[in-house]
Structures are given as structure tokens and as C-alpha cells.
Image (cartoon, rainbow, N blue to C red; front, side, top):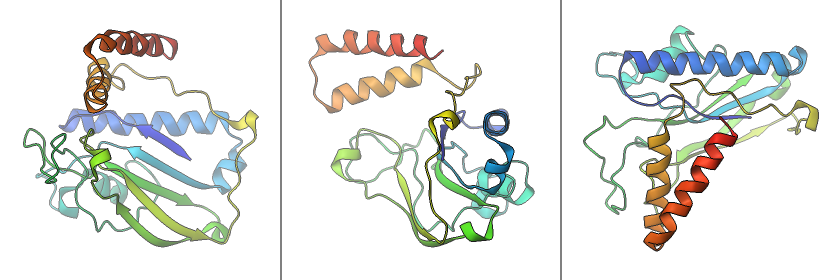
Length: 212
């Protein structure tokens, strides 16, 4: 399982950043996991992949990721179940009417891809959908997605020796502003007292420095 948060924002340069992120992540996996295991494993790649709807793309409803899957420019041999749910980004925070923020083009940013190189690991898709936007999720402008499937193979956890190190971020992969905004929104959602915010910010920076 590869869970990640790819480079954000719209525009062709940021699309290339996301492609570079994917290549770097897969290269890191190739270097740290025995090649035979990686090639024969049922692999899932998911998270806030951040690919957007681009009006200049004629096919696939303008979806950048579907376009890349077709051209094999990224995610070679990966598949994604057909999408039958609404776009997952960018929602207005704390709005119970499922309203999109007009500052961004609504897009399917949150995705689940899979790669099966072994016929015994082929999966049968039961459902691929987004979670209901309940009150507990109104603090985020994203909407989580989930994949329900069955497989004939056996899902095993890797040994401790195969757990990958934290992926080293490039300069375009991590934005302190995004993290601070996320923590501030979380504090507001939890109705925390204002005096606790500096403590949260301090903890955030310590965490960022530790994993820099």
C-alpha cells in the first residue's frame, strides 16, 4: 500500500510536479523492496493525488489522471475502477449543503489506483465511492473515497525490514502554509481555546523539522 499526498495546485507545471512525485516514489520503492516481491505483489497507490479537471483536455471529462493512465505517462500498469461519485475537492468548509469553493475547479483529487501483475491477485470490484459528507467531515475541503473489493490472493503485511523509510520531500512537495491552515481549521472545528493555537503551531513545526 502506497499512501501519499502529491504536489498541489492547478496548471501544467504542477501536473509535471505530480508526475515527478510519482516517479520518485516508485523509484524509492524499487530501491527498497526486492524487485521480485514488488513486481508480483498486488499494489495499491492512493491518497490526495491532487490531479485536477482541466478544460483543455477533451477526453475523460477533462480529468488529468485518467488522461495520464491512458498515455502511460505515469502509473504504468495501474488501473482505477470507474468513477460514479461526485468530485471530491474543493468543498466550502463547514457548509452542510455540499457547496464547492469557486476559487478552484472542482476535481476528483482523492483516488485509489491498483496494479495486479499476478493473475492470482486479480481483484473484483464491489464498489468505489466517496463517503457521505457528514458533519464530522465538514472541517476538510476534501471528501474521502473508499474501495471495496475481493481477491483470490492473500493480503500479507510486509516484514519490518521491508517497511519503507519516509519519502524525502522535494521543495515543491510540502507547503508549510497548507499544514498550518489544516491545523487551524482543525482547532476551529474542535472549538479549541485561542491560547492553544500557538502550542499546536509549535508542535507542527517540531514535527516538520523532525521529518524534514
